[in-house]
Image (tube, rainbow, N blue to C red):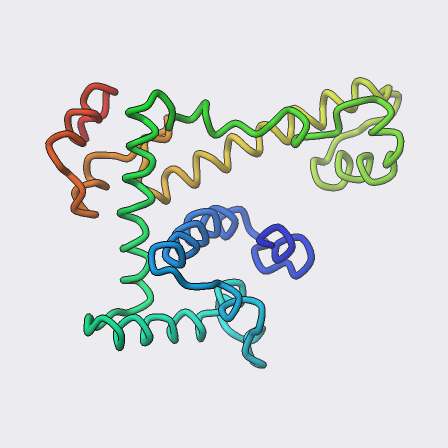
Length: 208
């Protein structure tokens, strides 16, 4: 769904917007799970003027409605940012739990080899025009005289490098280290800086 908004509607044209999306959307989706609510009324039916808003992908009119709904049910006056903060605490605690179990680092956020495609010479040649265009127009390369296998390696390398840069941006936005671990400042801000959490972070080289 998020890929559709990016690739088809072009709601996130810049690298920074993609990084922000990979922070915000997982947080809001987490909030639905925390409250036992369905996401369909949020993004399957959008306001008529949604495309004219500053952040059409987020459908903020509906997010504001969810904040009002939460406030009315719980008696806790909450704004959209408050909903995200609730989720951030849980999302980061989940990350810390994964870390405790031996996961939750940058290496564990790797995508499958197949997902970075194209994988084979045959696959590249089946969409040769598309892939050649990406190398030339998107990356500004001269592919004259280059064989298919070489172009496969080049395109995969470029895509994998872009993915690593995106991870850097997302980690920074989430308040994580370059290795994908929540920083001490982050767990303190989210009020999940329990002694066991700080001890876990210290054991993994995170002290700030």
